[in-house]
Length: 421
Image 1 (tube, rainbow, N blue to C red):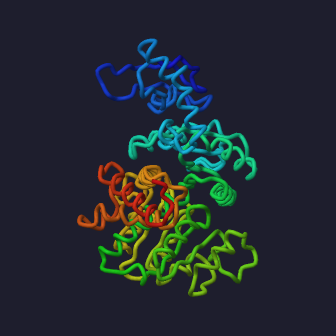
Image 2: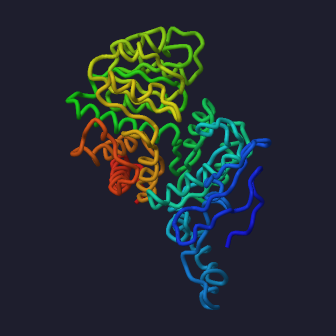
Image 3: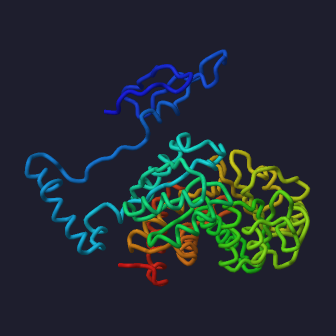
């Protein structure tokens, strides 16, 4: 039983039990001091006590069970692992568990809210790992911000885990944290804000192109946003053979002739924008085939109207897409968002559970670009025979998704020589 906890600020006690119902009871919550009336908010009731618990996979019913699960039986297993370290994968949870690591500096929709406030999100991520991929995950919120401090802390935690999922760490630090961890660890390190978004975006784009009888190599894309997601999407599109892609930040197109570029953006300029475009996002959209939004803000309708015929618009900012779906549908043949209340939701849960399940299944030492592209292709294939303008990507609740992605990632790991079984 979860022990009682103090209520959140402004919250009263539980007001309904909903006996006989599967619905979560609602709590009366006054979210702001001085607000004239209370509102019913079931979110606090659902989160009370947290969303996770630790359970045993073996019984401890009597002295015999205790002697096997703990002392003296456990000593035999410890000694065996000390002699043959690879046995840790067989006789502990290591090969089945991912650490979900954050510093709370870039929580989706909330920004820099710190480690404690980020925990509900990390718990949520962990239960999605289990629900959709059968992978156990542990939320870890770290109270440090310097790149080297984050890296050193994760490296010291890593012996307990089979993989590291980085989450909600602000750019550009997230790039350096991931790079350094990949250099120092021999287990998969995956920044979902980057690569999960990129995988699902590529899958949706492949199917949109197939639906309209077009080839990826003939498309010119424009990405609004040069942060974690935008950079990763650009990389995977180039790897997949996109015709051209220009990435825009707040100052316009990221191009080699700009003198204000960070190291990450300078590298980005080196493998994107083959056409040598410069200027604003609006100018980049003129004649473009694809818009991918991962930045927020609003794109003027006049710029949307200037896109090429039969275009694709993936406006993924939440809660307000960069281009409202009703506007996008006037001009585009396929429209996707990051929201669940419109068709074609670009949702990372379609990728990360299967990616880690596949990597852990073969004890991969890393997650390669080839494994990410294999995940995107498998995800696209799930609905390849069911395509329509409102269905270029599966639902997160499609039970075919995780097995397909898991198998494809495992196979790609073996093909690329990073699998260890």
